[in-house]
Image (cartoon, rainbow, N blue to C red):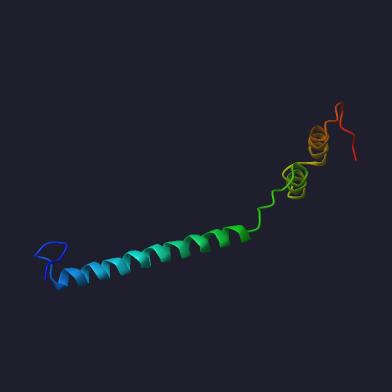
Length: 88
């Protein structure tokens, strides 16, 4: 019997080619499953909420890092108010 791959191709070579083809398709399918799962999980993550500048300033004031006068000055600066800070 004549094979397309030449006379040296025997049963073991045909078996290895069959196993190789099964492994190839298994890797393709597993890769697709991994990509689909990755895309599904990244879409479910909640977006990180950033604190506003006013909230950060209030946290610093509450933590004692800045005093009331500095808090009011910086708050006025954030809101675009010029002039001396009004004591609240």
